[in-house]
Each structure stands twice: as C-alpha cells, then as structure tokens.
Length: 288
Image (cartoon, rainbow, N blue to C red; front, side):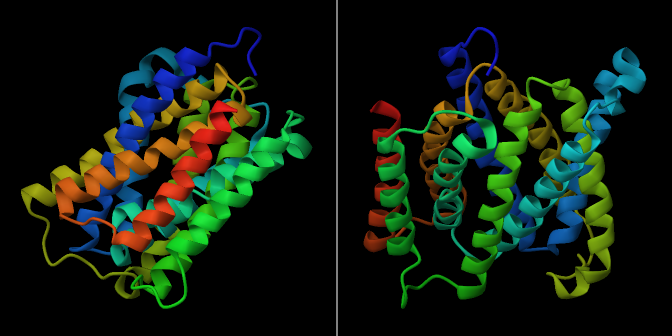
C-alpha cells in the first residue's frame, strides 16, 4: 500500500475502471459475432499500445519500456493476454452478466492470497465471504443450468488469469511506473495475440470484410483498455488489495446493465440468485 492510504480516491478510480471494463467487455462480445477472438485481442492490445505511444511516447521516450522487475512484468503481461483471450471466448458463448459473475470468484481468491503472497492481513470475515462467494458461483454454474459448458470453462480459465493479474498489479503498483506497466503488458499481449492468430480460423473465424462499425469497435477496444487499465493500476496505488478486492464485485452491476442495454440479456431467476449471493458476500465482506 502507498505511504498514505486514500480509500475514497481508490474507490473513485476503481469505479471509473469498472464502468469502462463493462463497456470494453460489451464491445468485445459484439465483435465475437463477426470475427475470432485472437484478432480482437490483437486489436485491443495493439490499440492500447499505439495510443500510449502517441500520447506518452514524446514525453517518456524509453521510460515506457524501463523496468526493474522484468519477470513480474512478464507474468503480468501473460496473465493479461490470457484474461483477454479466455474472457472474450467466454462472452461469445455466455451472457455478459453470467460470464462476469463466474470470473468474479477471483476477488475472493485474491483476498485469501493477500496474506501469504502480499503480507496483508485477512480477517475471518473475509474467509467467510470467500466461502459464500464460492457458493454463489456454484449456484450460477450449477449442473443442468442453461449455460454453455465450454463457455463456463473459458470463464473459469479467465478467473485463474484474473487472480494472477490482480496480485501482480498490486505487487508492481508501488514499485514501477504505472504507464510502463501498462505498456509492457500490452506489448507482451500483442506477442501472445500474434502467436494465437494461426488459430483464428478455428477460434471464431476471419471476418469476410471489415465495415466502418467493426473498425470503430476494434479501435474502441484499445482506447477503453488503455484508460480502464490506468484507472485500475492507480486504484491499487492508493489502497491495499484486500480493501479493493470486495469492491470489485460492483462490476457485476455494470456488466448486468450493459448486457441488458446492448444485448437484451438478463439472468434467469436462479442465475440472478447466484449473482446476488456473490455480490452480497463481497459487499458484506467490505462492510465488516
């Protein structure tokens, strides 16, 4: 945590990041109808890197790629690229609210790992909240539910990447320049996306032709990714991972709203119960 904690500032930054994340997810989901995930991932990370070079390159120069912790940066970049590939794959097969809810078992895991990995205090209430949150995930992805099994698998892989991403973000936030961390993660994700492009035909296919709407959405993924990532990193500068982790559950609200607004998709009653359990346990953990 930073020398002087600013929880309200962290909350404001995190809320901004969450709204932009929800819009980014909706944009990616819309694009998966027309093209495969590796190309979307490449556009998302290349757009972010290009925007950073344009805005920050003249001022920062070589500082954008400077790091004193190359291995941590490498692992964060790999976690970020895995998150993008797996989550967009999940969004192709699942409604946005349900895909996000399964992924949001990750904050509970972060809370539990904050003590051994980051040296932060984790209370008994947080352990209880983690158990209830996991129960909510089981209700949501219950046997016999209408959710696509492959989509659920992609969402679970996203969750694993998300845990690593959050812990590494927290670890690097006080140690490295946040812009350098963002740029290096984007550069690594570009390499991973390029490596996945040979699988494009089997991972959603190539678009027949890119129209103006699709080009605009591809550019939007880069811009939304850049701003949301910066907000997210700065939030960790001003507070601890164990403070921020419960607040991440508000993402479920924004994801449900954008899923309804853009795709007219709302969870059924049982799925909504699972989402409410996950959201409620996160909020109660935050309060107590």
